[in-house]
Length: 195
Ligand code: NI
Image 1: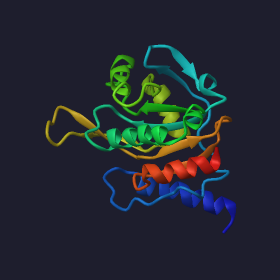
Image 2 (image 1 turned 120 degrees about the vertical axis):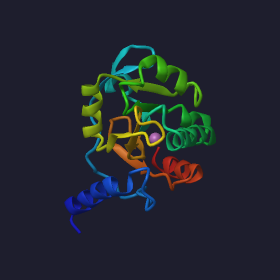
Image 3 (image 1 turned 60 degrees about the vertical axis):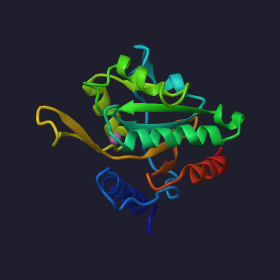
Image 4 (image 1 turned 45 degrees about the vertical axis):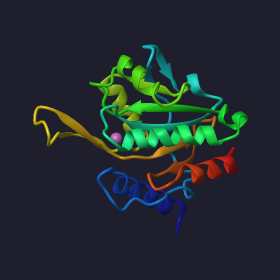
C-alpha cells in the first residue's frame, strides 16, 4: 500500500470510527507517522488571552477536542489525559502541554472553559474562540463535530463529535493518535517510546 493510500485510509477511518455514538472504535495508535494534520491556530485561552500555536511551541502537546456539556465521553477522555500525565515520570510530563479545544464555542466561553479545565489538571489549558476560528481548527485537525437536537430537551442541543487524543511533537507534527479504546497505561508506554 502506498503511503498516500495509507494516510487516506487512516483519515477515512478517523471519520468512521471517531464518532462517540459509534461502537466500532479501534486503536489508531501506530500508523500515523508523516500524516499531515494540525497546523497553526488562532484561539482564545481560558483566561481570555489570544493565543496561537507559537504559545505552545517547544513542548509536546496532548490535545483533546470536545465540549464542556458532554455528559460522558469528554470527561472520561480528559480524565485519561490527567492519568497519563500522572503516570509519566514528572520530567516527562513536564515536556507535555495538555490542551482542551472546544468544538462548541457558542456555549464554551473562556470563563466556562476555565472552570471546567480546573476539574482535570492544573496545567490543562482550555481553548475557545469564534465560530470561525473553531471551524478552522476543526478542518485542520480533521475533527468531525456537529450540533444535534437534544432528545431530552428539544430547545437544547448536544454535539456529536469525533473523539481522539492527539499527541503532537514540539514542531507541531502528529506523532500519536489515541482512541477511546486506548487505556492510559498503553498511551503512557506509547508516549515514553516517542519522547
Ligand atoms: Ni464529548
